[in-house]
Length: 288
Image (cartoon, rainbow, N blue to C red; front, side, top):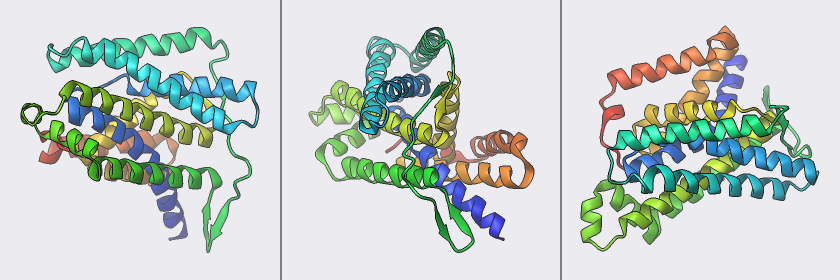
């Protein structure tokens, strides 16, 4: 029972960061009705930028966080201009294929400019681990959970308690009706993309500080985890993305604890297949 509870707690903390990745995908898919496969690689570039800043200025964690988020935002703007705004009149599948091409661009650029491939990422070593009865709360996992929870709360306040959030949800429900009500759909779409890139950059900070390193494969990893979290909770649903990320984290840690690391990804992909195949919600129209 103690092992089960420990794996459950670890899964919830890990799942919080998966929820952030899922929210990034959901914001873009819910508003623009298009899938951004380059979301993970934009975070990858941000983390590498933060890693270089950390090597140049050891101990300046605020600069590392700022560099990571700003670089992710700049890459997000590049993706939005190339794959979404320029192809707005094309079919959604055209934008999706375009984002895959941008994904390859960003990943190859990182691979070419980073000869060592694996880069260290600073972590706040001053955070202590906590013990609650027989359960150990690791400092890096605790930071992931608390940081992700704060970001999600701020995001939900922005989307459900402000005029901007009302406009975003109106566009997600019906872009035609939102246009008739005076909402600038193009501006809201770009703003949603910018917000998703910011959330992705912050998620990258939390994940990288836990792993304390980054490799060029992080882009693929983040894309797969974010898409899985979004689809598990129902495509286009913000609360669903949060729930999907937590479920994914719990499934992975329980599988890792009881069956070993070689079954971890298989279990999460099997769960995704079952949800997409059997749940009508996973195939429903996007709605924030």
